[in-house]
Image 1: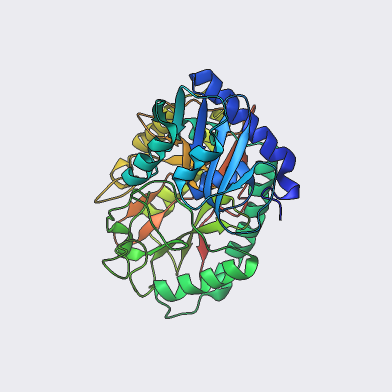
Image 2: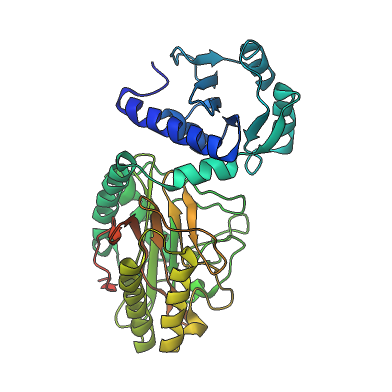
Length: 391
């Protein structure tokens, strides 16, 4: 079994060249990758080990597990120190990038011993920058996810039953997603992030802050995972926000839709419509060269003009962003936040999620995944945006 799946050969080669180009631009001789998301990016599969990419475009895959992966540039090792043995005859490098922003202290210290005498720098910005611009191969993967994601959400009103709790509805949505082909892995970048298959918020639980850096919170079912549904009964007048996992092929679409039982307050309806309006405004504004923070500023301007700032991005605790990159993980670059230094590029894939929390009603607002194109944003999650009724 070749370490690079046949369908990914050309794509992986192009990715390696993009990484090499970024290394050259930063004056770095090589980068050693070890996180699953980055190994998947440079090989087309997840394995346990390392990938060593040089600034001239060579790559070596150091594999611990599984056995049976083949290729002329594959070397099996038991421990990281053995990498040095395989590189004994290779040209010495002056500067090596490691995943300082991801790997543990002990792991980094062991890897430093492989590159004795070399300057060690953080490679996380290098790989994050390269991964932030998606190829058409990746965009097609995301489009495929979007189709499945939308299909699953279309079934949500059909699976609701009167008297359900939020967790009962979430479990049924998870079942629909898995039957649609969802892999069930909600891969999230960031060391303060964890979640199981997504978030469903109903009624007053949407007002509860969480320790995680998500747009919305919720008390959760247990103090060991304090986010999302908490067993609340879904009642008349509640807004039910569904923000569930869209991973069907290793790439992630992010989508939120809102449902209601009976009628909800005019304030909630107005806030939800404003979220839709923000999406439409930013979709035409977000072209290559625009500062990511400008999108945030435009959204805040619209919120303030509507007098809804009190409810925007949380009630008791507010999120400091309205969007983020998506791809192999949720929370990639660019970040749509007031202090973001990111500049939009063609091929960025971003999820926009301007949301509101209305007291006693719940959370409203939509989230879509978009590709940045020369003429604005192309939506990959084309589901109806209005609040749908649960019967």
